[in-house]
Image 1 (tube, rainbow, N blue to C red):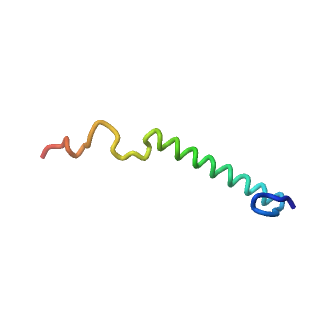
Image 2 (image 1 turned 135 degrees about the horizontal axis):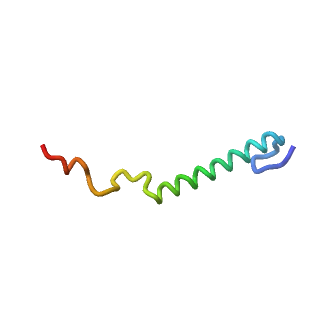
Length: 55
Protein backbone atom coordinates (compact mmCIF):
# COMPACT_ATOMS: atom_id res chain seq x y z
CA UNK A 1 0.00 0.00 0.00
CA UNK A 2 1.21 3.45 -0.91
CA UNK A 3 0.15 6.77 0.52
CA UNK A 4 -1.20 8.97 -2.29
CA UNK A 5 -3.20 12.19 -2.37
CA UNK A 6 -6.32 9.98 -2.32
CA UNK A 7 -5.21 8.08 0.79
CA UNK A 8 -3.68 4.63 0.91
CA UNK A 9 -3.95 2.75 -2.37
CA UNK A 10 -2.58 -0.42 -3.86
CA UNK A 11 -0.05 -0.16 -6.70
CA UNK A 12 -2.77 -1.04 -9.24
CA UNK A 13 -5.06 1.69 -7.93
CA UNK A 14 -2.17 4.14 -7.89
CA UNK A 15 -1.51 3.34 -11.56
CA UNK A 16 -5.17 3.97 -12.41
CA UNK A 17 -5.20 7.28 -10.53
CA UNK A 18 -2.01 8.39 -12.28
CA UNK A 19 -3.47 7.54 -15.69
CA UNK A 20 -6.69 9.39 -14.85
CA UNK A 21 -4.84 12.49 -13.67
CA UNK A 22 -2.72 12.47 -16.84
CA UNK A 23 -5.82 12.12 -19.03
CA UNK A 24 -7.58 15.00 -17.22
CA UNK A 25 -4.53 17.25 -17.60
CA UNK A 26 -4.31 16.43 -21.33
CA UNK A 27 -8.03 17.07 -21.75
CA UNK A 28 -7.70 20.47 -20.09
CA UNK A 29 -4.76 21.33 -22.37
CA UNK A 30 -6.67 20.20 -25.49
CA UNK A 31 -9.74 22.26 -24.58
CA UNK A 32 -7.66 25.34 -23.83
CA UNK A 33 -5.76 24.97 -27.10
CA UNK A 34 -8.99 24.47 -29.07
CA UNK A 35 -10.56 27.50 -27.41
CA UNK A 36 -7.58 29.67 -28.37
CA UNK A 37 -7.71 28.46 -31.97
CA UNK A 38 -11.43 29.12 -32.27
CA UNK A 39 -12.70 25.56 -32.49
CA UNK A 40 -15.74 26.46 -30.39
CA UNK A 41 -16.41 29.75 -32.13
CA UNK A 42 -19.64 29.37 -34.13
CA UNK A 43 -19.38 32.80 -35.75
CA UNK A 44 -15.92 32.69 -37.26
CA UNK A 45 -15.30 33.27 -40.92
CA UNK A 46 -16.15 35.88 -43.50
CA UNK A 47 -19.76 36.39 -42.57
CA UNK A 48 -23.11 34.79 -42.08
CA UNK A 49 -24.13 32.65 -45.05
CA UNK A 50 -27.83 33.20 -44.46
CA UNK A 51 -27.45 36.94 -45.08
CA UNK A 52 -25.77 36.45 -48.45
CA UNK A 53 -28.57 34.28 -49.85
CA UNK A 54 -31.23 36.09 -51.85
CA UNK A 55 -34.70 34.78 -52.48
